[in-house]
Amino acid sequence: MGFCMDIDFTKNIIPIVGSCFAILYSILQIFKLYSESRKNTKGALIEDYKNTKLILEDTSEDDIIYNKIKDLCEEKKLRYVIGDSKVSVECARHLLLREEQSKDINSYKISHQYVNYSKEKNDFEYKFGLQNKVVRRTRMYSAVLLYFIAGFLALYFPFFFGSIAEFKQQIYTPIVSQHSVPLFWVLVFFWVLFWGMVAFLSVIFAANVNFAEKLVDRRPDFSFKRLFKKSTPVIEQQES
Image (tube, rainbow, N blue to C red; front, side, top):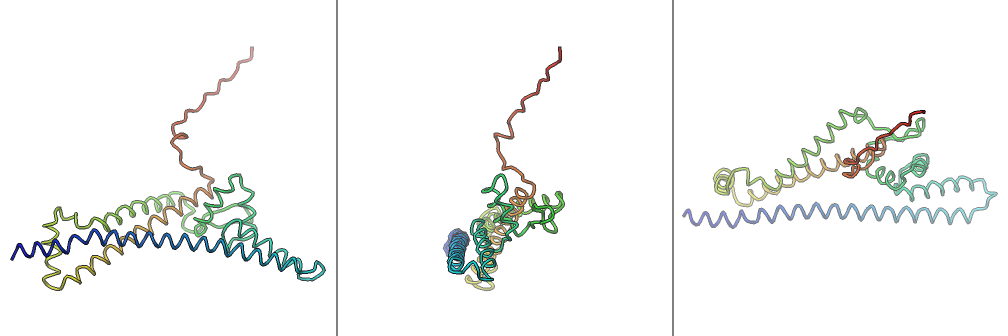
């Protein structure tokens, strides 16, 4: 009887690894769809700009709406260059006038939910809840820590019990004996899904805050070469 239960348990526990990888694959597919949607958005922006430009070319300069369409065409052109359909003209111009255009535009597209463009300062500033550096860094590093914890919980929870036998005794057998094998798999699925989403949202938040700091504080990218680079001492010449 015990031998049969061990076989039954083994048959049902082995697919856990497969289910975990299947859910991980689903998350990667979501990333892929998100990436493709961003490409489609970029294509829609260029089409929108081209169509507006055609309307401008077909509009007489004497027409009272010519200047309005011209401004609209300029706005759509800037939005296409930045790659964001909601960026303001002032913000787009500021990004294009920055020293590191490509890097800052990329940082803005990633972190725009956490920053605001200030016309008065002609620069970016943090949104509410991120202005204080200590609070901001605490939230970012906490999100990174939560990412690792949640990822571990999602993919390695059977190993918390020390051994497969202990996991079987404390989790698998009580659920299967009192309920059913399908219920066990439902619990496994929602466990992995929940902690997988927590890990996903945590790393997204940490990445967004990181790019927001690069944009607002103009913080350079981390570099080991810069970290270990020795400063050249300045030798002052004495007047003879």
